[in-house]
Amino acid sequence: MDVIIEKINGLWHLIVGSCQIRTPFLETQDRELVVAYARRGVRKISFEGAGAVDAIVYDRPRPLYGNIIAGPAIIEEVTSTTVAEPDDKVAVNEFGHLIMTFGRR
Image (tube, rainbow, N blue to C red; front, side, top):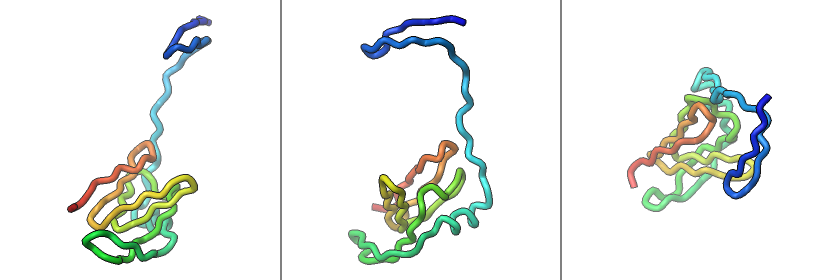
């Protein structure tokens, strides 16, 4: 086994092995069913220009790869909240990240 001592960003690292890993891929399921399962309820929220509208509240860990959530929406998790305005779209990519596409502003 190769052992390498290397300075990276000012810190010394002892590297005792390496391997290739595959990037994560989250299974796609029935998109409508998963998005419906992720719904927690509805909440009134005010947006500039749109006024008070009903926004669907989603549980963040539940939407999966390929799911698309249309605004107005609130996506809640323990450490953060994502708000999608009317005409915005939020997609879940293969890593589970939320990718927001902004609508009209």
